[in-house]
Length: 315
Image 1 (cartoon, one colour):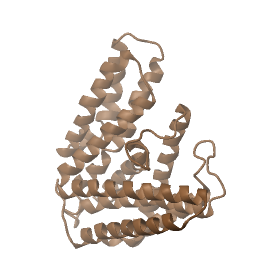
Image 2: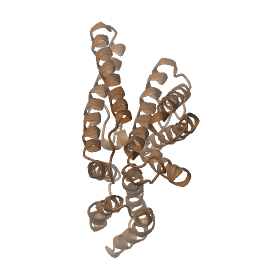
Image 3: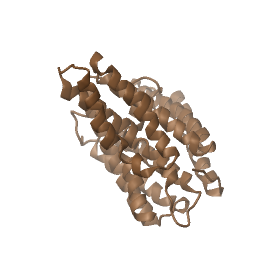
Image 4: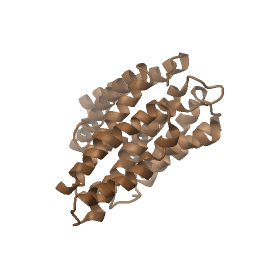
């Protein structure tokens, strides 16, 4: 697994840095000029998000620069922290401690080892088949039957979302696309950029034009105007950078549209879990973004679809 640095990669990274620099400058100017309390709160939120983005881009850039192993370590750590947040928010019992040991310290690292050695056959079934069957057996062996189905479902669901789905991001580097050898790092960049920009643009369009709520009891800030404006804008961005991918413009646009809608669905589902548990965020690790799972919820749903779509149609 290798990453290839070329002029297109430099342009992509440079474009992101330029956007963040512009966002930081605008945020600074707005913080000095807005007067109303509501506007100041909005600007403060935007500035904290921008600062968090700088940190995440730097970390992501370091991972990309160190090659495939850097990406595996980054997303492996992301999965571990996301799973920790998920299990903390949906607590289990003492009888599940050994099961959780297997989930955190055996299944999670093994999933990323399979990515590292490019063992697709086992990578694709380890969690949805073997872990799915083994972990409830381990819990049952502990002898604690109260809320057994609920406790088991929490662990299995956490593994699927936080580990299995997220592990598809570095697995993109293993895809063998004719005529695109050694350039898969740009596809990884494409996925993260389009999905994350969709989140940002949905927020911006929602603030500007949002009136009609998509699911007010689940996520009051998500509007149809924000959804349509954000996904279409991000999809046009994805189409505009088709030159860095093996896709045509329309393929890049269509794939971007699909993964941005999947990302929106992921955010909605994970918000429903937070509402069920009565919390605003999964954690507080990232200033302006909550926890790790708050930041990767959209990628969790978009990454497997993106990976398998490319694998089935472009390899």
